[in-house]
Image (cartoon, rainbow, N blue to C red; front, side, top):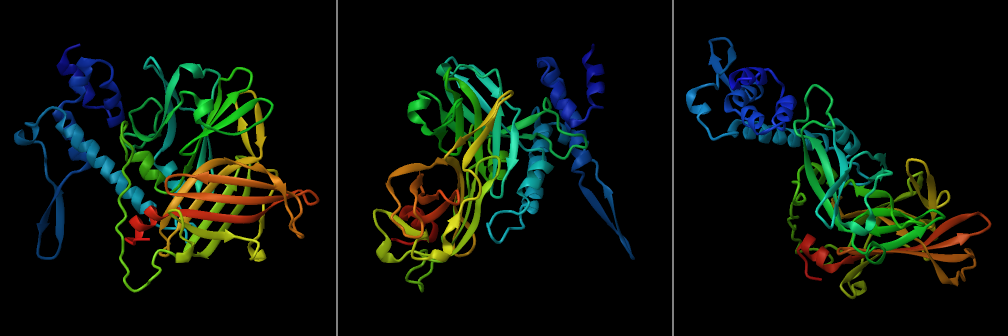
Length: 436
């Protein structure tokens, strides 16, 4: 078919169809990127208007963009202009939707709604040692109070021994806001969230737990991989993503580079001698897929200068000195999993969501990660809480969490008897402009 006829046909296509047609072959690609077609689309969506002033009122009328100087641009110019403006408009609308903040968590109230409104989803790409990529898109989503859990399972996982990396992407329609629902095969853009190395997974990963069928291994940040015990092959992959700037991380990065978080500008305070040491607020969620075990907020956390040691601030959240704060976990603690034909629950492990806010209510340290409960060799000597002691520890570059629980056999529940956060002084100094 002559190029002129194809161009005429392409001029009637919507944006998503035009982008898809451009992927057929090189000839269609060049025709679908024609400046005349894209200028028409651009002018229809971003039509500048001229104001006509009259004595009693004002009127506006569209100004035509179709003229020789505007058409005389480098190839794909108006396509790039249209897409960049659409992305900027999506970002502006999303930021407006994410502006209302929950006073308890310091996070946007409408995280879930904004993600669904813009067709946001997540996918993983596994790369083997030969460079071949294996994409997994179909996933089960579970939205929690401060995080979302994404579970991928399949019967066609590549062999674990040949895999080198796993990349986690946020995926969004290239042109959100189109009248029709986003298509899986339509034009989309990827935003790299994290990359994990799978070589020697059983040695490099942290063993979280196991049941009769699977073993669980975790990789920072927030990834959980289930391996079949008999075959030592992948059964499922689970990602736990904290809501803090999740929309930006999932939509505003590129396919090769993660979204760069904006730097925090320290607000200096010369009056308060313990600036940055007090009025922290913690929101803690503990869940395992099937339900929540704990959801609580702790206010007025502080650290005295004398408690700063080994490069960490110590924030005591729960201790035996304050029995009022002692909390129990609801239900049987474990992480639920499922595949196409099987499902199960690995006990004595869970997902911990930590949201630590500074004195202004701004998110300071946030993470969502699978952790395990380790049985201590010592039994509780407490008169009120007699039973086995379990500990949970988490650490990353910004801080550590140390949790201690007691199992009460009579009431069949765990009681948190100690919870301490250790915050890196490097993190505090960079955030507040201090020098502890």
